[in-house]
Length: 256
Image (cartoon, rainbow, N blue to C red):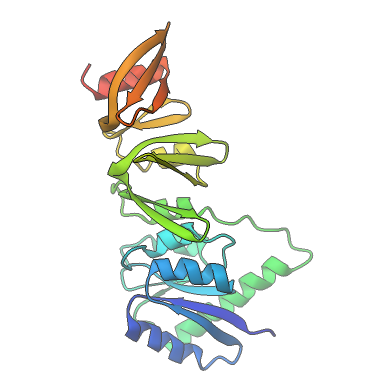
């Protein structure tokens, strides 16, 4: 049995030390990396390509859900959290396991067994390949109900950008990606436009076209270009097409 290559991600040093101690009792586990925040995690996981990541939920800079969104390819993930208000059901469905702090050695051993089973199922020649869970949807499912998305995390090669949602000018659908237009720059993110729309504040972002969401605070003016065809000119000069139904939604949102 080959050793599991593990990366531990937790912003609290005592929690990392305790997990390392517990893992030290397992001869079939090798801790190859340790990270104190989400940015370090994304970088280390991309470089080390571990089999398994123990991932904390509440961390500064990037939380565990945002880290998960940025992992490609994605290793097996076991979430670690001290907060049971998070969507544990979502963890059970999408992640290999979750550990509710404080957990003991036996509970950790159970998680490692589950990881082994999951990895064995992935590599079994007769087993059909299981689809990878959608990280963005997992993040949405685990968010506190009624809480709107406050920022976007976008991976650009080895770099990670955190974009506050109020700085976004417009979001454009491009095949399986969205193009996030913000402050004169454009970032690509692998996500469906409709999925992101459901997470945004409808008072701020309006679907003005089947391919565009616009931050209403960024609209400088609207112009009629042809019958039932309008264009929204944003404050940065960008032009966004506005359909008839999109114009109606804008009128309702902007008070006529």
